[in-house]
Every structure is written in C-alpha cells, then in structure tokens.
Image (cartoon, rainbow, N blue to C red):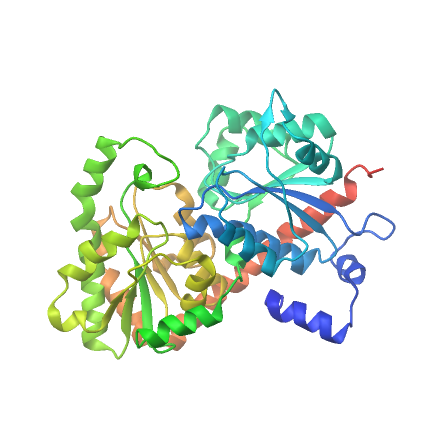
Length: 433
C-alpha cells in the first residue's frame, strides 16, 4: 500500500533514499526513455461542488506517488477557476502549470495551449460524470499523434460523441462496473478497458488549522461526530451563481415531491445517533445549493432535544477545510457521492444513498466491496435497513473502520494498476524533440 502522499513526499525529501528516476523505474518506466514525462490533464468540470474540485488534486497526488518525476499541465474545463482553488493546487503541487483556452476549429485558440499540446507526452481525461472532454481529446490525438487515456469516468451521458471518441483512447478506466458493461454492450473497444476508481479517492489536500478551528468553535471532538449531507434528486444548477441558467420547473417539482421521502430516514438516523450514542452530527454540504436544505430539510425538523447534538455548517467551506473535518469524523452518511469517496480514500467509514435520477456512479460502492453501505432510496427494503446500519457504524467504530480500510486498500491497488497503464502508455508514446 503506498504511503499517504504528504508522508511520502516528506520522507523522500528528508531521507533522499530514492531518486525520482529510481522510483519511476520500479513502477516500470523503461530505462533510457524519457523519465520526466509531461501529462496534459483535462479536469476541473465545475467549482460549485467540492467533490468536483477534488478530482484534480486526486489525480495529481497519484502522479506524485507513481510518477514522481513527471510534470502536470492542468487544463481546466470550466471557464471559472477561483483564486482559492489555484492557491490550493499550487501550495500542494508547486510545479503545477495551469493553462487556459479552448479548441476552435479543431485547434487550440492561444499560443500557451498550443505549447502545452507540443510539450505533453500524454493527454489524460480525468474522472468525471462522462467523457466531457471528448472534443479536446480528439483534437490532441489528431494534431499531435500522441496518445490519450481516460481515468475513471461514468459512461453514457454524451452517447454518440462518447461512442465515437472512446475507441481512439489507449486506455479507458470506468469508475463503476455498470459503465464498463454498458460501454462493452455498445461495442466500444480500446486496448485497455477496465474498472478504475475515481481519482478523488486519492485527494489529500487538507487545511488542518482551519478544520481544527471549526471543530473547536463548534465543540466537535475528533472521533465523536459524524458528517451527513442532504441532496436533491436533481442538483438545482439554476441556482449556481456562475452558470446563470433558467430554472427547470419539472426538476424543481421532482425535488420538492421527493424531499421528505429521501430525508426522513436521514433525520431518523440523526435522532438515533444523538439519543443512543455519545456522538454529535455535523450537517454539511458538497454543492453550494445544499447549504440551505441542510437547515430546512434536516435541522429545523428535528426534535428540540436532538438539535442540541447537531451542528449545521452555515457557511460555504473549501475542499481542504472540509476534508480536514471529514478526517476527524467517525464517519459519513448521506446522499452526496464525493464526500464518501474522499472519506473512504482516507480510511473513514462512509454510507452512500442513491436514486434513479443519479448516474451509475454510486454502484462503485459494490465494486470496492461496500455493498452493505450502499442504499437505493427507490427501494423500501433498503430504506428499512438504513437507520440500523448508520447506527451500527457509530456504535461499532472498529468494525466500521476495518470495513472502510478494506475498500481503501482495494481502491489503492486498482489505482496503482491504473498508473502502471499510464506508465506503459508513456513508454510507447512518440519521443519528443
């Protein structure tokens, strides 16, 4: 099992036992080939959700572990990239280069992006809800003749475009087995097609100071609180400030119709935890639109005696503070999907709820051995076992942590295999210059 990247980086810097080239060689990067490759990373699908923000540092942390001599060029998809995210990435990854631009008429629209195309040995489409960057991958392949790969996506959102582009990839890792099976059913073939966990499992950007301040201010003791996050059936993207989209009345009506059905079991779990254990509950959020519903749909409807054991996060948090808090918790339960990913990546128990409006992403919980912690809220039999399972996670912390760590180990092994494929692809890539 690889060391956590922060520990590993400090170890290498202080002890100096292995050079980057020696580490790369151990992972299979052939001697005599370029040992400082450049990867152009297409990532950063949106900023409104800290789970989406986590994709990029997750992949970069994996690069640091398995390709320590490599250089990353981050090419964000979303037009908006706040300074706070730039600062976070550059603090954690000082060598990171960030380029902006679009593909216009099949070509980069500025010299900086043209240079990135020329320098990169490999284009990697990072984890996400689909192959969002299919056009950029096509342009890179056509203009440079160099390979591209896909690292941990769900399949099916873009249909025709994905079916046309994915077969041109040198490798495709799907983040859930349902996506892999569907792609095969659709006749998609590539040299390597396999299950590969979301890069966000490896995210390790943590602001320990901010997390400690928040816990102290709210009387939350490490290991004595759990995090829960509500979610609407359809993310109300029309409320995302930077997107400026019109309201979708049908989706809004569905959200309203299902809010009690989907969140009453969460409230029951909160009540059970507060009344039957010595743990508190922290109501958080991933997406900025979830902040108010945590209060309206959960906190405000709790009995008064239970509210005393509940903290509602009343202001937005950055990824690095949130992850610092998750790592101090006894576990997670809720309907968001990247907070549990980050929790399991840190060895923290995490119970996941899903429903038909979501993609197949949630089925990765079965793929990493966490079937007992996956709940389909369209199945009443699953809802009936929800509260007892959440309560057991809190009451039996050692068993819960062992279950989480088994999944963490499986994820790490799969991601190591995925990076062996990245290395093998780089070995076969055309030499530069």
